[in-house]
Length: 300
Length: 214
Image (cartoon, rainbow over all chains, first blue to last red; front, side, top):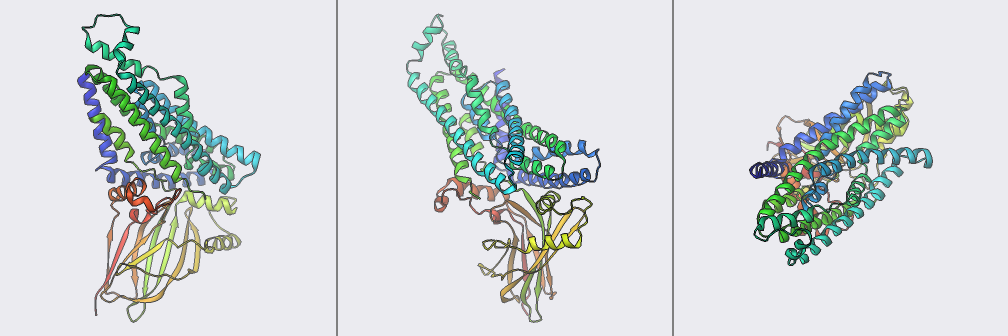
């Protein structure tokens, strides 16, 4: 089992190294080409719909899914955050994948609310809308992520300070004999891991979902302008599922890494130090990512 | 410590605004009879999605038949030829390590074909550039990479047959590494907060035009 996990993390690291390291050139080129191709296909499909070809409703779903997929292979869409969070807090795989899926779909819902809310209630045009999404919502999202990062750092520090007394801590929960050293550390490791609360999950989802992706906004606006509301709504959800499929893979890799981290840490004698350190590191990564995201927001 | 490497690697991915507009570009380089480069004729074809965005914003082609009336054509031409004063024009040439100075655009033309807008204009050089024995590097790019250009129509030399063109694809890996440096490293110290580094050039195709000495 442990061997399989180590295999998984090695594979994951290799894939990520390919993704962000040497093989990135190839992947970036493919992703860009795919994005270009499907953006054009999307335009052509909308043209067909405008000409009254209702069969294109299926086509738009397929094209949007592909568009979302290729878009998400590029940077952004919460991959860094979900992976850092997953590894840092050793989040259980189903929960992490749930976060990935729900936050992607949440981005679609936000896009719908923002576009239709502002069109109907406020009578905004594309410019106002883009300023609102690209500046205001991006800032809120970055701030929320920064807070989550700070929360992880705070937890890490607290656990580090508690590490010295982890044996003592352990006594409160288990009354086994002391010869099972592994057991001692396993329980202290899962103690740290087990505390992923529903509130924390919700905060993570909200922070990612509040910032809709520009592609979704543009599609909704365009389809609204041409009276193709249904196509726009279906398309945006298909796009979100395409995005989610990429984020899910990242969550899977991060979840595998987190799992093997938990297992190997439990075997060792330093779990009480390593896990809080990882948590701290993940918190730092998220704070930095949030800070960079915030500073990159360009007032239009 | 594989575990620690993971977040670090993930973080190496830049927080880049992905391109949302795709443009196919052709640069026609016009030489006079003294082998001096005088004008660059710039031809851009917008992707079908961006085309629809423009048409939607301008309220053109409401019937969706893909054909513009004369009035609609004129409205599109006006929109395309109205440049923001800060807009540099996305056409960049470098000769002897110096930027080639281009004058204001003129001779705009637009058309809509197969659901894609083609928009062209002429950029006269501020001073004619003698091309004999000279190499000039040309790129089409949006500095902020909101639009991604491909030099798919290439650079075409008109008025001389003594020139050759070679193409250099962007090193995307290096481009991302440089972007990371700008975002997180000391090189980026000069950037003010909220400023996205102008990295478009790193992601652009390059056409190197070399003309034989006479």
